[in-house]
Image (cartoon, rainbow over all chains, first blue to last red; front, side, top):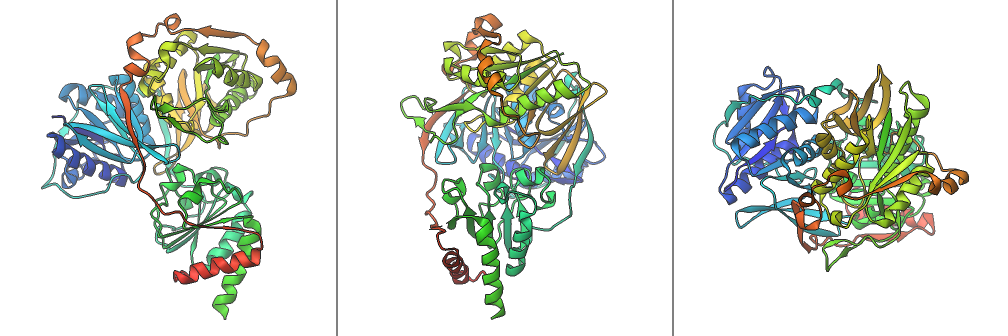
Length: 326
Length: 263
């Protein structure tokens, strides 16, 4: 019998979707191992209203720990979760996909001498304990990971856990009394959630043309915009090219960007790293153009074209325009 | 001040990786290379040393691993590190993230650096986590996946992408920072630097030398134990077209899209 503690991230009055998935998953697993699912939120009390915290009850959390501290940084959350786990004896700490989950989970590993599994895609109960499934070697194999520590840390991959509503009524909200470690106070948020580049909406598009480093330069996106125009779609980008300043942050797909599932996802010059894959693998039809025949994206694309996108994309645009015109 | 850069040798991306079925561990016998993300960490250290207000006296490359890991240190030194430390001990073999983070933090504590830099991830397994494990052991503030570092009044002004956009965080030293590949373009080592790498000081230390408790490291003491391996749900392989005649290729793509009513 063990309780599961989930970190629930929030921003501007809403709980993060991956956190909601993690709470839902914890509720399902807790029922199987005879424990309860609890959540911890951290921020200002003004924003963390009883209503917002209690709403996690709908996803199966029976108790929500409300901690007050600086938002958007991992180490204050490590302090709060370590205190709650020490006091109430949770057996597992569970995180939905996202950057903070990696950092907080890792901090708990050191603080609680815990075992950890990252990029977890599924969790199962076995003999009253949790076993985490982790894909390895570019997702070609899955490893079952068991814990030999009093606390097991499970860090989910983006979108690994489905959001469900299994709870009945609001969760009990408990204020946490904890102290920040001295080192947790030595990093301070200057600016959070800055948007860079034009605001584009890619989440509602049925057709997305996505570009990666293989485009070679920022101007490569012009050809993709023309192709998107001929199909009535929008343009998306990988993290690498967004960080390089080639395209707008709001069009970024993947680990720290958006998750999409359009009818058609055409990836041009994208190798298909896991961090990108998690944001688009649910697309109905995936077409990839890449000159490297060993690119991982060909392992999960429905149509793969091995070739030079600079030659193929303009001709494809022309052909589609001609077809529509005719 | 002193910067320590954590580096690691990883299987070369061009070599197929596999699990050794008899041990359940990654077969690390193939061609090895310095983790590409770590070259960005070394470059970040060099830029702080050469072009910032911080008075950086030395950059020390630190690795943990078997004898072959020396190559990663030589590469790190050829890229500019002044000396290196090789933590190597049979007792450390097979350590999990918990054990590796602990062991590295013990080695780092012996150096007492003002800043620890590392690559945010390695393609062979430990994604994103080692930096934050090390930081908590060292009781240092930490930030991972950083893509820009500026020095401001002796503190580091760091930028990164987080869940809701770009965050800017001011971090006081000493600190542990992991960096992404967008942070810089690593320099190429000169032939002279490559030739001279083996002559720079290298300290080899064992687990006991840096006070590592034997019951916290190694395969037997892993807190997370990898058990059975199984195949992921099968996904039928897609159709592949090798582009030889582009007009023909485009025709095939258009037909494929048309069949699925995507035009």
